[in-house]
Image 1 (cartoon, rainbow, N blue to C red):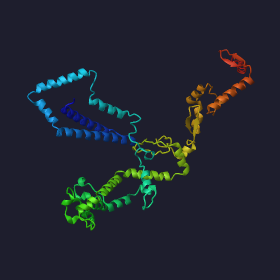
Image 2 (image 1 turned 180 degrees about the vertical axis):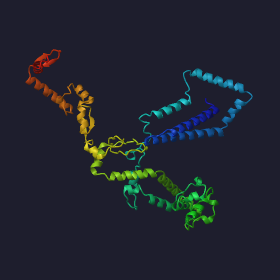
Image 3 (image 1 turned 60 degrees about the vertical axis):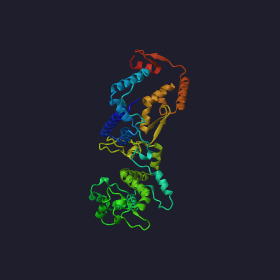
Image 4 (image 1 turned 135 degrees about the horizontal axis):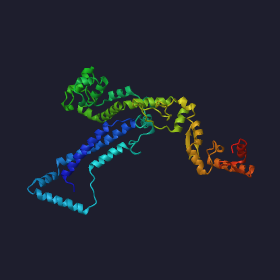
Length: 435
């Protein structure tokens, strides 16, 4: 059985290894958005484990059941040698009963963790489940939220793109309702003033304080509450509310709503970049013609995460081929070469070729030749543009019949080099004096 001190030692080791692994993970260069998101989730998982280990370690040090104290007394008392040999006896007895059990050191676990990070499997490459609309964290998929919104009664119905891009309206709503502000990050009222009148008004209303005055007055009033409870504040700072009997009741009544509104305000700030990109992406989609949207739905566009030298993700929803500069070719050039047309070949195992040029070229390539060989049919010019197995077999039977009917007896000749040729070829070679 593992002792209390051994448990503490193991927890301390795990904390140090977790800290080292998190540091290496954060210092690793991320080349794509997918790498960055996966890295963030790996760090989050290690951070959660770090907090869990720290909590277990704290409980062991607090020693509420007194077991740690008893163990320390046992190994530091007058019979410490007897305690040592008793524990050694227990260890030997354990290994005698379990001779094949090997304890794997913790270092192996973290080495495997680093190997899995450097050579991720297919499952590990997608640590988060995103919808197609989100582009693996690039955009926001707010369709479910929008459906709930348009089913609300008594609200103005807006378009999807407008609802997702309401900056002033969101701030205004939070200002009227009130959103708490964490003052621990501010060391002076001047820093608070940089937030602006609306944000200060929102924070003051969340506390039930007066929200009028200039920018400096609001910042000073709010900063004066830092580190103080509502009961310790000057009553003159609170706004008059005839419906409430005191500032405490008013604060408690709006506490839950204010907390939710504060979360919304924080999400608006954190996801500001994604909201802007989502707005542009939706506008881009709305600007496309019906034909282009239908083609995009049929082709099932794949996410492209190739980045240019500035580490910017290339927007390539139609999965266009990349040009010499590493960027998608223009759409007009894509259609000019017929790359929007797909050709299927059953002989090639239902392989799909994009564009007529690739389709014509594939008849002389290994995949089509292998398919013909599996059918026992020679890949000759007689079978040009044949893609269906049934057509190829039927044409092979027809050609064989024609040869039999038109040439019931085929005369074979041998030239001077030993090559077998037909009569016409033999006579041509003889006439030219090549035999």
